[in-house]
Length: 245
Ligand SMILES: [Zn+2]
Image (tube, rainbow, N blue to C red):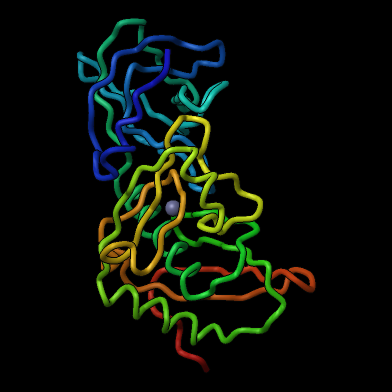
């Protein structure tokens, strides 16, 4: 049975109720619905707690997709008691961690705006994110930081627009990633749009993002590494760049 992914319609949903529909051999818990994001598109899955009716807690170490994209599995930490089928649980996402991932993920989109090269890979992390670009040029990281921070400070709205797989197929130019497949196959694709009428950017993405760019806060490019002649790896970190000595 497909899991209703509540986070798709509300990135800020930190708590929800879910009913256990299946326990897998490895202990993974399947629910009818969840607010826990499952690892995909470079964004790690959520961690957190499930609260049982008696008040006891089940610690969730990882959330991932099952055999298909519409199944979401919650992997309990080592040694946790497992709930029973039909049991109702209150789901609590580790919100400070997820919110950092949302800020970081949005920062990756801003980087792709100020650095408009094809993306060959990306990994969102709570302390550092990396984005790889197909580019041979050398670029000044202070300038990239300044350009990203301008977009943060301009406080553009960030919102999702749904388009059909067919509409995406008809507009292949909106896909910036070369190796990361857009989240197709579910009939509809979420476009993450930045700015009024998507004036800053729009990009197919199934991750979670903040709702306005100011929420990203202070970020900077900590490092640009040369990964071969035609590849540059950018590392984004929170905070302002450390003063050069
Ligand atoms: Zn995204």
